[in-house]
Image 1 (tube, one colour):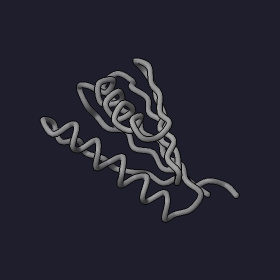
Image 2 (cartoon, helix red, strand yellow; image 1 turned 90 degrees about the vertical axis):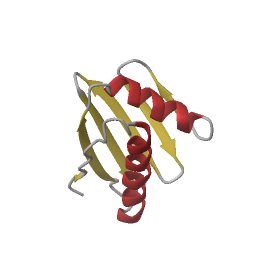
Image 3 (spheres, one colour; image 1 turned 180 degrees about the horizontal axis):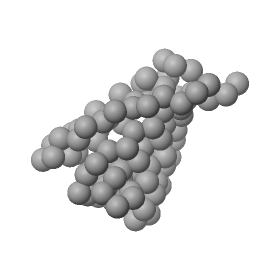
Image 4 (cartoon, helix red, strand yellow; image 1 turned 45 degrees about the horizontal axis):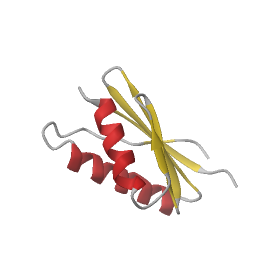
Length: 98
């Protein structure tokens, strides 16, 4: 079965900081790792890959079905909004084919 995917590219002055905050936050409970430019978080219901590129935080999520994909989008977006409260991010997920 082909996983369902979604991508959001969020404009921010601090993409590496938010990438690190997301990965560190989840690493207390589930597998996650990061360096200065990229990271990943492995949930029981899907995976999130992150990349800091200039002033953009790229967040790619994948899950087995639409329900889990929506859950991934929601969990990642809610946490990013909480961490980036000083500059509330505009998060628009774009679903991939499949």
